[in-house]
Image 1: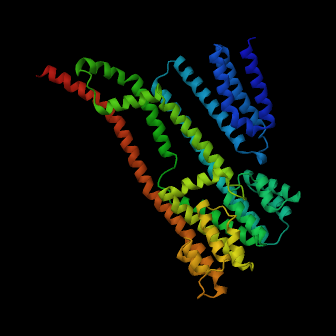
Image 2: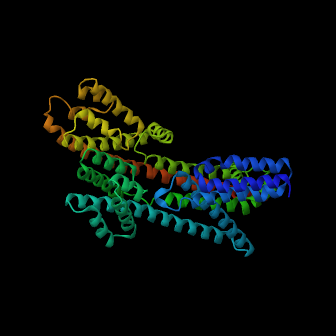
Image 3: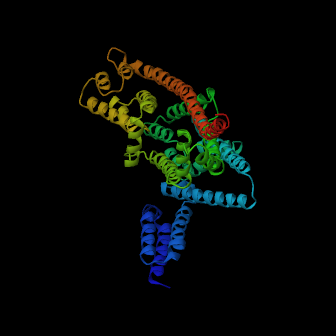
Length: 489
């Protein structure tokens, strides 16, 4: 065994140990170790290390990291990253085996395209069912806890009883949360440990309500917010959300098949009959398809999908932290705040949560500055949190509450709720009215945006399909015209 092979085996053993003991460090340094092994294999001219050790180190380390995240209550972002990468590798291998098997059976390309699209449709339906079930679980869990708190029942016993007749996902969450409550955890810690997929906004509201002693009111606000977000978008849905994805994938597979099997024949005939002067649309389509099949476009697209999916998951996990926002959270919030349409939704959603906690805090008898300070721990956009911090600083300096809210960019409606001309006892009622109004406005704008964007997306899909059809059939028309001119001068 060569020295290079011994070094590669040492790196493999070290990363398997590191993946079991320090999975976060192993996941973040794995690309550097793979690059080091690749450099050693190329420098020492040992192809066995290049073809065997690199995949072994990469996949073995990912398996070790994923194995440490078996307990879903303690999973971190690197566990999810390892799971996603392993699933992507497995899907790629299965797709390769499927295509090789179809090629060995000499099946037609149409059969392959239909089978692949059927698999995509089934996977899309399963993903949509999982997402729908997850949202329904959120509503059921918080509705159950809120009902128990309103009726002043023993929380652990009532949750155990409610889990008997609940759906499987809801029952599992209720039992896990009950287990942590029995161990002496607060409701916030029990939800964080027993329900890792709990929405960050709901978790932050529960923590704030528990801190000021208004947990039933906080749970009622969470219940109303979850029901609005879950049931509101279902009322207006022009088309199924997976329809554009299905059309794009179908057109991609059909285009690759046409470029591989059909267009080369037209190109050969065009070189003889029309002097190689193919239409511009056909040349563009050939360049794009060859870039996906043989060039970097396919790898870039796959890498972009992986990076976006992993980044989205890391961003969602970073929102679970109720303390100081992390760098990932700040970067994600900054990107969402800079987007023109998304910024409005970020502002309205943050304002609704802030209004709800301000109302609950004032009803509990908290001073205004303490009520404002409580909103800093909510799941709001980081840039909106900076406006709340500006408001808190101004109020604690002794400035007018309404004027400081208006000056810090929180809107005239919130300033009106704290205006000195309005009675102090009317402020919670005004805040409740504003909360209901902005929640309805948020759903209205969401549905309006969906009704505007879906037709635009369908129009773009139609243009894409029309471009592909024109690029595929225009060479045949050009060849027929050339032959007709040769026959009938």
